[in-house]
Length: 163
Image (cartoon, rainbow, N blue to C red; front, side, top):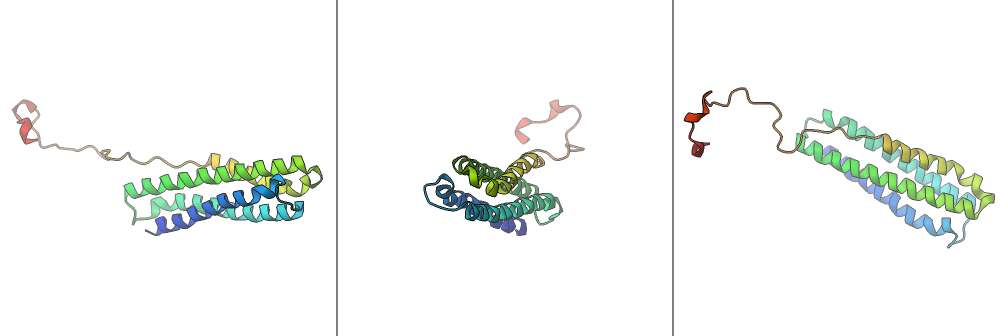
């Protein structure tokens, strides 16, 4: 349960970063007035949160095998959710990168102020591409072959209705 609870909080942090993208968009596109310094400050705050979330997702994924409270199906489920959260982190980073590029194109004098945040968002997006979730056994797959089925070597004498 602790892995699922931790993941829930991480998913909400990812969701918050996606919401921040919708909040910063009017400022980055020029629909709402702002300064390059203020926008750069906001983007760097978001970068710090996203980097922390990304690190926590990686740490959680690495620790799933050690969690004895989780069964194989639970681990597969949690890993699927981690993978989805990673995709959302990548999307958010791409959204912020696009906003910054647009802002820099429209405000070339302030481009140097937002460049560090752009580099960080690009790093976050690249690190999500490097992230892989190990494959576990498929649902319903037999984990180990049975040594003895209890059937005689000659299966002709076995009634199929009893199986």
